[in-house]
Image 1: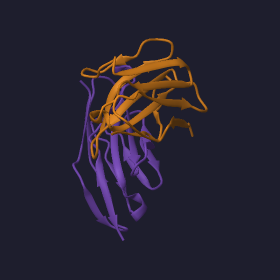
Image 2: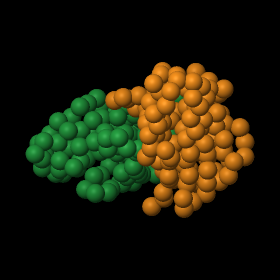
Image 3: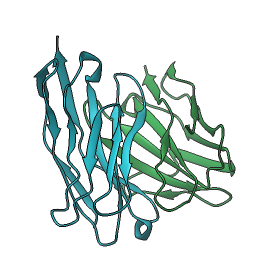
Image 4: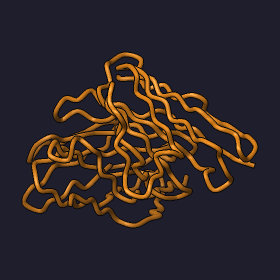
Length: 113
Length: 116
């Protein structure tokens, strides 16, 4: 079945450092890919998405490119801020799976001032 | 953006009580709503998928008589935890989906349930 694998955390960075959180997926169809962010005690917020190969999703300085050849959707940000501290979930949704969203395990990011 | 309202945000109650959680899509029609449970520092575990006007589909290992789901309209789904016990304490999150290809789910802010 479909699955999402993302790098284990926690990831600890200093402010203004470069961020990469790796995400790879397996899917039988042609999924849409998403990154969600969860701040402490809150639900999930959509950060960005990409719906087909080579699409780049971007929002708030974060970017991720849908790479079909490597089945990856790595999240990047050039300069992190303390306010970016949160848990980040990579996810996929496939119409062949009834639009269920499959989540990765989540990666906790701590950004130090 | 799309807004999903989940209520209440926090519940503390005695063992044996039944608790109802509401999930509303405020500005779009949600043909499908999903209910998740999240344990501390873990990912979301899908409990059930709810389609408007039909019975919910439960994931393996989730007791349907324990977690009653109703999706009576295109904007409202409810999860009732019946005769709750301390092991049911968790963070429950709903999401709403409009049924269109390539669209994301939109999440509520979650309900923290604590059973004493």
